[in-house]
View (cartoon, rainbow, N blue to C red):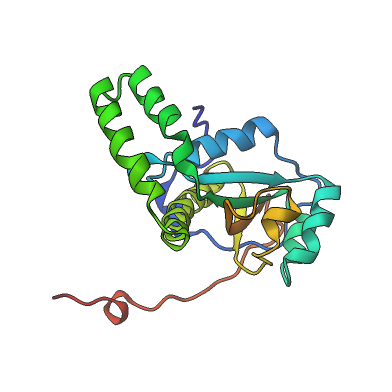
Amino acid sequence: MNKNFKHNNFSEITFERKSVRLYDKDLKISHEEMLEMIDEAVTAPSSVNMQPWRFMIVESQAQKERLNPLIRFNTKQNETSSAMILIFGDLKCYERAEEIYDQAVAEGKMPKEVRDQQINAIVPYYKSFTKAQMNDVVKIDASLAAMQLMLIARAHGYETNPIGGFESDQLAKAFDLDDERYVPVMILSIGKAAEKGYESTRLPAEKITQFK
């Protein structure tokens, strides 16, 4: 993992983040850097480390045209961004459990006996979930990775916009994915900002927090 950030100031990266909807059309992000950012983003936590997030990078003009009718009022981001990152949750993420835990053993991060215990306990447990239960799990986990990706993008000198306004019932099939398995979570536009982004307000903590 490279971590050659252009910006590495926590306060600036976190608290100055804004949703950007207009980008430099001429700026393209290399596949190498895009994969680097995703590698950094997926250090986010996930339930029992099942890593259910899946990413599709829509960057070519032809594929952006395919996406355009599915994103409602978010077409400006699609037209100008370096890429649109489609983030899905894999309802059968447990099928990679052995691969994940074998890697942990190989890297000395988990004893083999713990790996075996985890596999024997977690996979049947996940398989017992209803589709609705798995949907909740993968959406929470994938959202954690998405938030981290937004901050990582800023560290690399880019801006993003998280998009929830899209045809969620059509997105997977439109990009040749099994819509019974892959749940759309959100879309992130990413690129070099051509605007400052929108200022917004937040309710103060005392209005949204209770102490018991």
